[in-house]
Image 1 (cartoon, rainbow, N blue to C red):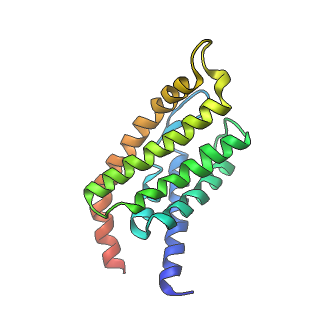
Image 2: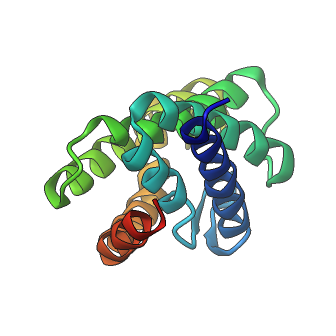
Length: 176
């Protein structure tokens, strides 16, 4: 295995581990699952920007599986596992397909977070439809429910990412 591949795998492991530790710092937890965390997506996003979208998606999928195994579970329904963990966190890696610039960083992060929201909305409408108030469309309920924590969580992640991005880039250049 070449030095670059070893470095990439090491950075993936470190990003996944830091993301998992940050996920334990919960700012607010919703009653039926979902929470606002301490910028837990930032390590995965930084990894994706550094190593590209395909590797970012793979790191996100591994994180999603680990997060399911170690974190709070509101459901163990197979659709919830696939949509809320494997797909939703794997999708975060797509930000690595965006240009390595401030506008690419922000745009890619927004797209990744919106697609994560879409995966969770789908899970909410299919798996958690019984939580919708009587007479309310489960899709509308799921959109509102998931947006109530994902918007603040997404903003925290993007703000932290923007604040540390240049320093991380300089540090990585020195370390190469």
